[in-house]
Amino acid sequence: MSSHGNDPRQPSAAKPYVAPVIAPQDLPIDYAGFIAVIFGVAGVMFRYKLSSWLALIFCAQSIANMRNVENDLKQVMMAMMFSLMGLITNYFGPPRPGGKQS
Image (cartoon, rainbow, N blue to C red; front, top):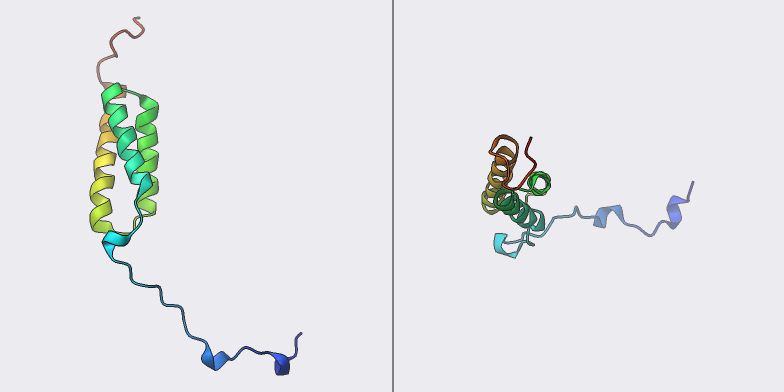
């Protein structure tokens, strides 16, 4: 296809890429984990089903993008517990006051 004689690249000078080492405190903030905690708390306190489901989805996203296992796992587990607590109280708990009566 192309002439190898005119190729300016030098295969002997190529080096493999090595990712720079980043300290755990310098990693970017896990926004998905933070949003999961907020939605989880709102789901438990205000008994919003949608908020609890969104917290569960953001927990899954945070787990998928986890960089620092020790720090991020604590936050994700807390958000997961809040979202599960919200779902359990919304679906199996007593009805909300002022709701529909049948």
